[in-house]
Image (cartoon, rainbow, N blue to C red):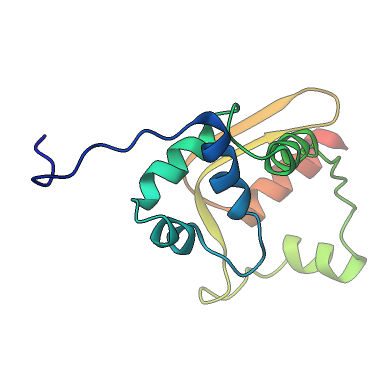
Length: 134
């Protein structure tokens, strides 16, 4: 890759890289603004920010915490009110209000798994689950 004529490739020390990366943490300052300040390409700063040697400690801590905070929450399905149950067993929903899916994958609390593939009305799947759990 040919550079501009007469310009030497700049070599940044590790301390300079850390200082430049730390400036990106200031609120209201973008990486592009910091790059223009030093007459450099923003992609180079993004590359340095990915490197743990140069990334500011604050940014490393926040990304680690964000990963650790991911958890699965339990979901409980309660029985529908009596009116809804009568409507589900009686008249069908109008076509405009019917909900369907191409694939339904459900794991019950006791570990049993229900997998339904193909176009299926979700009201049918709910009825199936009620029949299995009764």
